[in-house]
Length: 309
Length: 244
Ligand SMILES: Cc1cc2nc3c(=O)[nH]c(=O)nc-3n(C[C@H](O)[C@H](O)[C@H](O)COP(=O)(O)OP(=O)(O)OC[C@H]3O[C@@H](n4cnc5c(N)ncnc54)[C@H](O)[C@@H]3O)c2cc1C
Ligand SMILES: Cc1cc2nc3c(=O)[nH]c(=O)nc-3n(C[C@H](O)[C@H](O)[C@H](O)COP(=O)(O)O)c2cc1C
Ligand code: FES
Image (tube, rainbow over all chains, first blue to last red; front, side, top):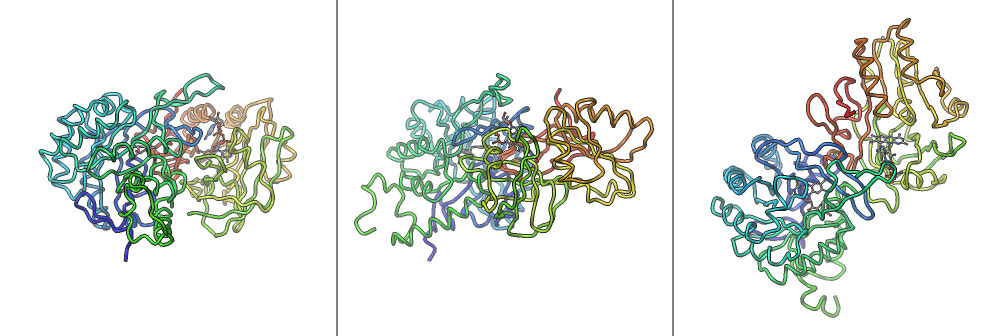
């Protein structure tokens, strides 16, 4: 029996493990390490309507326990994805989550329509990319906007729609609730936290874009808290991510209330990371005598493991 | 490919003890092209460090590293028998077939000589090395002991590029392989263009994944942005667009 088997968003997954959008390309980079079909689902790089070159200058910097990036949504555009990448991914047997970032509501809707007629399994709305000047963050910080975009997208697609939220807000719960009330099938928590780094040898900011998104182990406590908080107030499933690099991190997110987890920066630290987490989770469930991964979702809200486990 | 490494030797090449040569035995055999690199993991650092493979004999690779921060400092302190985790080989190396049956110039600045050292085993008809260490203080004599080849060593008196340009008055090169600081490569690009000499350059960028997944390491090229870790680090000499 597969203890990691998960049914979520109306999709059957062999395990509840995906990757953070933008950390896995379109599934082509880690093939020499393992087959991407080993993952429950692949979440592809964030896409825009038109191709984007992304930001110039230095795009990454290491920080204590994490890293900053300001890639700026470099991608070939949604049409190229649908034509060139998606058929291959589907032929290989992958479940594909498409992450999209529109510059306005109309673009989100237009992209959702394009994906509606594609083989994509789920649409993730990136309302939170911190590295694009003309949008992203502005949508994600207003409950009203998040609700509106979610509703408009839901009107044009029958595919599950998951809303990815930014942690750069004062009250994530109200925004999560706005997404749920407007028809979101799920939430992804969290995107990167805004940060910066300065090179003291030159006195200049390291990143070409000055600010960037902080990810990796450094943000795990923040992400975990947000998943825990939001879980209390919504009924829709949560994809938890933020600093997950091993199975113990993943377990924390399941216990906080995530139904799926995503590995982002963990892929850069160890290309095998998602697979090692998968094996680690199986081991944990066996040792604890737990029949299914779904049993531990939200456990931290229910008084933890009962005696004997 | 994930590899387990065992430190075979580790020695400083400079009197200031800022550049060292590390030899690591890997647990598997693999194909290697000069110019390719590995990602080395350093404890307490989130991301691996890209380091060129300077040489390879069987399963033993040689790295030439300059200490600039915590990661490289850690590597400088590893001892014989220490374990290190490595992934690689990564990236596209130099295309040595460009230089076969031809006369090539191999031009390196500072620690940029590291990826060029593997080229000394290629079957070029004739090869001349222009390696400059300037104020970095790699002890030439020390270096010679480790790499006893036909290298032309240059010191502070003149820059490698000046020497190379001067030599063009009397010599004809069919191909150039180079690596060094960005400013040097940009100047070299101009010299090569002016003299219509084709070549390949290895460039450096901040990296995260090293395998093409994150898009952190992109550089500007005549054909749009390319990933240094995947499409590079070696590019056609006229392809890369340097900023200054
Ligand atoms: C493809 C490739 C091959 C390389 N090959 C070699 C090699 O053979 N030998 C060698 O000594 N170095 C090589 N480098 C550079 C090496 O990766 C960095 O020096 C190393 O990552 C620094 O790590 P650290 O933890 O010591 O320093 P950090 O603490 O990360 O940084 C210390 C200082 O060094 C600067 N720095 C960090 N990374 C780089 C970089 N990639 N380029 C320029 N400056 C940097 C930082 O901005 C900072 O000022 C290579 C880099 C690339 C991309
Ligand atoms: C290099 C990089 C690129 C990213 N690109 C995207 C993106 O295109 N779309 C998106 O929704 N999130 C993007 N993210 C955010 C991640 O998907 C993830 O939410 C975040 O990094 C937190 O998880 P982690 O700590 O495991 O990396 C990116 C993150 C990184 C590090
Ligand atoms: S370092 Fe990640 S794409 Fe090059």
